[in-house]
Amino acid sequence: MQKAQEKAKQKQEELNKQVENFKPKHLVGGIEAFMSMASFAQSAGMAISSINSLISSIKDPDMSGWEKAVAILTSIGSLSFMVKSGIDSLATGIQFLK
Image (cartoon, rainbow, N blue to C red; front, top):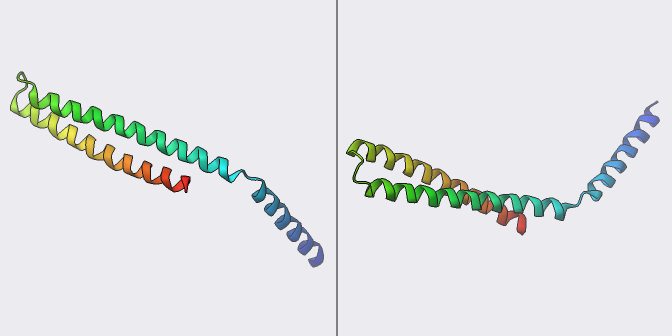
């Protein structure tokens, strides 16, 4: 019985090695890199949009001081999140390209 279990375990280990060797690692890394770079591009676009919104809020003469303050804080909060997210995505993409 123990010999059969050892044989089954050995067979399972061989199958695991075959499956591991079959995985197209270069393809998976390429897809991950592409998705990370796409996420970076999205974050960069949203950061630019936040900057435009910030500039528009500052220049808008029809907004009250309170409305400008809220718009500025919202834009800065969004911008800081997008910059961090973009840097993380860029770092991940570069890591997969190595």
